[in-house]
Image (cartoon, rainbow, N blue to C red):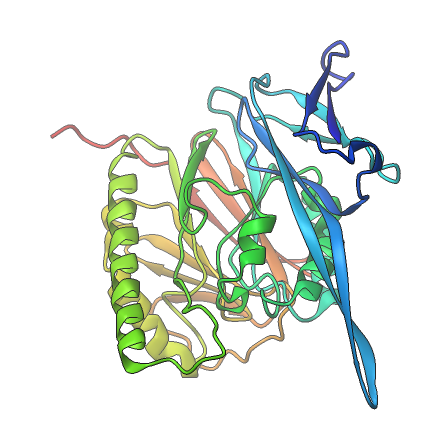
Length: 386
């Protein structure tokens, strides 16, 4: 199988580059593409193209129960290097006879304005998820972030099949950056399907004037087993998890300390620091205890989270803390506004951010295209020398 990559005729003369994958003995009879192709982790000079082929299927039956099919997939990815900045490329995965060529655009090498979208909790109600994706496509973002709970159960391949069926038109052309939610269940499928920076659990990267950070507030799960978990195994796992939180916080502090001159820093993770749902106030207090004042101390531009299924904007220490969990999961009642609360709404939605060189403007768009909130963030001033 090959990937065909061509600079768009709209920008440059046609230059074709063929990149061969590792050849197999059955190269002439490659399995058809079942998921994708889609673009990941685009920079100014690189991009990753991913897709999956079906590897097999297990069907189970029982009396009075409809047959159930569980499919297995092979996951493929190709890292494209030495691309030209600010260039639109056509690409296709050869062998996919049903797909037309699609495009992606590399980022400029210098600081230029950009638009990105944020959505969260896309699980459960697929009709809502589909309409939200259509709304995001209409905004033409350069990147999309998902604040977690992409699917109802990350261990269930059927949920991922539906997710990619709904998101396919968006992800074929726009790089998509998720963070882990509790419903991903730390499943291998998540790490197979996405090609993210760093260790993929938490990561950061720069695009234009922005430093983006994705964090993990769920943490590794104890491996599933059909044997009872002993007390010593549970204690060992909890100790490992504490070390994991410590490593992530050390990484976060080091990462933020290196961004003194970044014009904007946007952070994404699943569990919110502020809530308007009474039963979750205690949980948000625990998240705030874990992070402390690290976001305020490092002049972060905004923090985006999910988990609570509504829209909520709180401001603390001058920083917007935005909960965007209206991408498809059942909506929650909003019954406990907090002192930090500025705006909230029980509504399906996504967020569009237009980043300029001096300020960034956020617009919260509901499922019908109406604006339900707007706010601005000024570019960060360069840090004062010590």
